[in-house]
Length: 77
Image (cartoon, rainbow, N blue to C red; front, top):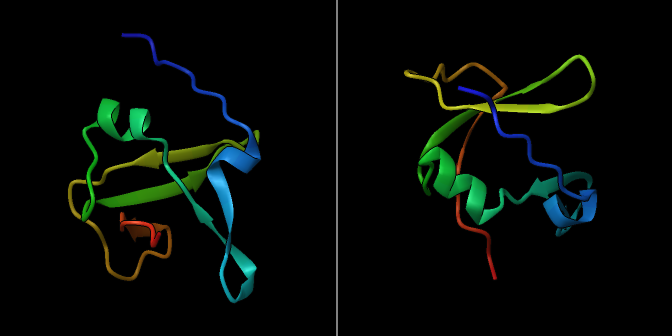
């Protein structure tokens, strides 16, 4: 099965984190969440590929000490 490639503009994915000028919030588009079967509360692992791509996977078991693992939360509106 071939992987489907999605390309987005930086501004569509990354938003300033209120009160934090060193970090940004990453918004995963709804179509990606749906196609991957991800939902609020899921734990995801983030890695950076050799060409700067962001690789997101859902690990079978998350390691609490892995700094690349995050939990999907709802964005404050």
